[in-house]
Image (cartoon, rainbow, N blue to C red):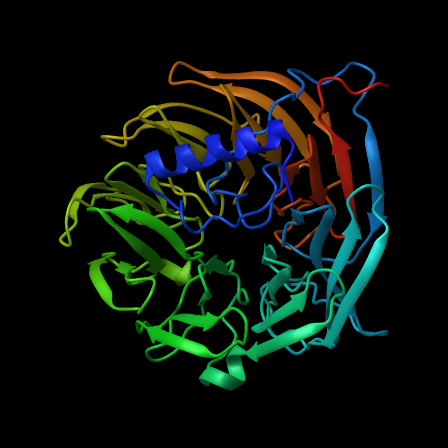
Length: 458
């Protein structure tokens, strides 16, 4: 099938950029250039490269192309070849989530994988399975589906890995992490977004020798397993290129590790000292050249230089605290690194700018997150050209320019109401997708598609 000229050009440009930055270039699925087929988009780097996007939001409001009722969940949507894939949670009649979101019991219900028609939101198929929840914050699944070569891979909050036919929803194979690896559900559920790499699906699992596991993407057969840690954490597997070779970066609470993605052989391991508290390795590791940046809620930040199989420490936060912080203490947002500066939300919603080479803070603002100091105040960041799209926990989409001098908000529009009460206040904590000149976002009641096209007729 031939791509339209603009899409083909965009795909070639994206491939070239991925090769230059050395991260995820060969792991990127061969899909349409304006798709968002996995966590953080086509390049798994939170960059939206589509053109023809509006510069600011219109005064008469954005055009909602469609909105569809769904159940609860933290997992964002994936968009691929005219379809939208998202997971949700359905409670059994008479069941309810605990008032204290930290409480762990057994809550009966099901998980669903939904496939929607991108043009109008029509539900084309659904795959549903029994799934009693035992984790804290039980609103729903945590993971963005991964779409590759006519198949969609999903991971539920209790460790159900599914491979489904992307067109029909037919199950092709499945794995049960708790049963297959003899492990328990992590405190906040299984949350590491699967990585499709070549003929493999690589997952964050857990257990003795199986923190990282690669499965044959066609059959589900285990290909290799690697690493042991008391807790697996929640950070997704990422592919980077360091010292002239592709490396699978796997960050668990005790160390950041680089593996051979083909065999699981450990290239190097660098300890995170002290270990990350509460297992909260959540944000995706970020690479810039030979640098690797990590951030967590309690332990703060670490910057490594990976010029060989013996990484060296550039700088690390000295304070293990959620309030008395240094560096960047992000709970879940993957930060943006641009032209030598780091941008992202800190522990209480302080959206900050830091110097990459030293960790020095330059400014902070609560405007794009919670509006004031709030524990885990949050916003997701996606880069686009010379500006960024930020999705706040209040359900607002923001266009802003992030510069070392200051935060410059250009435009803001409300997409979804924050209705999840797990953190003790109403939030939207699911990452949106950007494709087809649109944004796709969900809360615990609906998913919406909103046009961001510059030439949209209203």
